[in-house]
Image 1: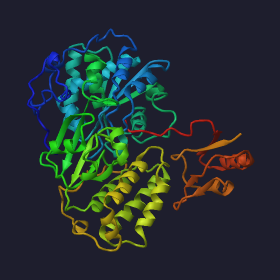
Image 2 (image 1 turned 120 degrees about the vertical axis):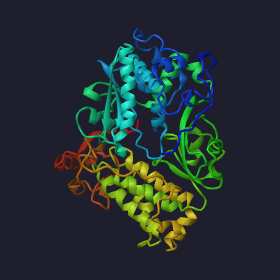
Image 3 (image 1 turned 45 degrees about the horizontal axis):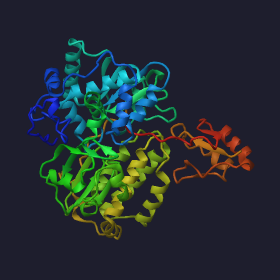
Length: 444
Length: 76
């Protein structure tokens, strides 16, 4: 666990709202979450709590052009409007699972500003016509569950919220944070993705229209509810306004969670953590893409800005690999992890991911059978797009990008010349973190 | 009318009868799971219906081609 990055900001009055620091205000009070009192001192109360009608906040979030901070980057206002337009009472699910191994930003946010997340979930519930909020957490993070339960109890004692808040502890598989997996678990099933349609906004928890948002997204909703869309857009770039949390790990001097303005250049963001400027970087997460730093440093960290490089901000992950480390080995480790983390439901994922993970392991070891690069290229095309969820697509994207970013290494490995990193069994902080996998049967 | 094949990848367990009955539009990957090659023209509609009916896990269905093929899942 890397340390949190603390900012030297005093608790700011709403009138002083600093443009580039929003969610992380007051995080220098390390070691405990902001109490409800501290939270209200910092941001003021949630306006209109308990009496706001439908619609106003949906329009405000749309006008703010907030996009989801969980990875997919979908426009939040569009999603809220889709749920609000359905008949019958809705449900809100706050996704705090953060199953991405290289991401810590949601854990940091929940650990420092739980009431900001809960405010956002409650405001979103009122706006879309929901009377209940389900907050989903990884059940191995027992300290986090305890802290959130305390925050919910504080709110109940203050009789703050007109909707019910329920905290759930789910198995922490990589794919369990996929939105249909949350719906399936909340409906009494296993935390495995489902075939769509129906999408959750059509028919989700208890067959009701269901809004599922990442916890950071909801924290931004809480601020838009307070300060409005125009204020939200004073940070970031046109098309990608606001701030976002990023997690920087690997070969960086100060690993941790940082709040940046959306659209900051990747090189400037990496410089905040003191990243090695001549290495490579995995951007987005384990579904993301590998790049030489030099190729991507000048690009803005937005979906549009990164698109020319075939990259996306994803969940705000930047993992830096030092120049001396083997990128093929790093990608092989991640691919092996992702292959084991499938829900074992769809054939192309069940069989395809272990097959390309094996190809990559052979390649990393410099002991390829046949022509591994040609075989991988063919298998990438066959596997992607054929699962119920995007797990196989994400794994293929990461693996394919490694063969491009580390093309010279890949050719050398394919010719039987492994580098030293390929044979290393040592724990290596310069390699991507691989969590211990869950026991296979624990999906409920 | 042109028809669209939709496969439920969770329901599909790779019996592969569909690829026999509709070889023009369904081939198998190296692990024996179907790959849909494209929409079904009127001339193949009868074979396509046979393939849909033959699936032991009811994983295959036929829709009008104008329908949204299948919206992709997303991590929230």
